Amino acid sequence: MPLLMLHRLRPSLGSTRPRKRVGRGNSAGGGTTAGRGTKGQHARTGKGRRHGFEGGQMPLLRRQPKIGGFLQPRRVAYEIVNIGGIEVLPAGAYDANALCAHHMVRKGRRVKVLGKGTVTKKFELTVHAASKGAREAIQKAGGTITIVKN
Image 1 (spheres, rainbow, N blue to C red):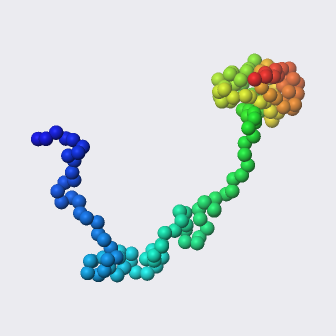
Image 2 (cartoon, rainbow, N blue to C red):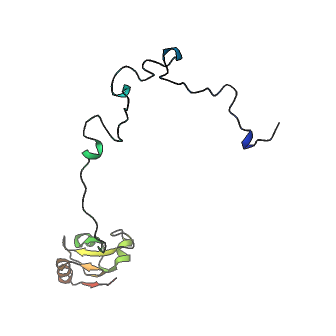
Image 3 (cartoon, rainbow, N blue to C red):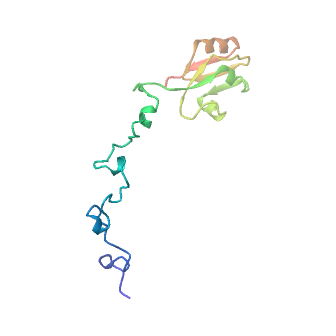
């Protein structure tokens, strides 16, 4: 048994056949329509159509909604927490990591507190930003909001 080498590889005997040359006359076995069927767009010469062409129907790419706009390069994104959501926590001091541990925000994000909802407990929050309404509500309940620059 000879060694298997790349230069000795051959297809199995009888497994390959020469390609059929169509369009060379009826006597050659592939004349007349040459395997293209009878009439129609696909039977014509130069039948190639551009990618995505749907026969004149509005193509899928043009039917999609037009999404415009762009992201500002220096945009600061915040994780939003409403004071109504903080109300479910026990009173105490919380920072971004503590809110993350309670599954209120995602890890490694800046946190902004907004004033939707009501708060009755005393919270000491250390966050990156807070709305005016949220500050007033927290202070009215006896708590404080400390803003961290990061």
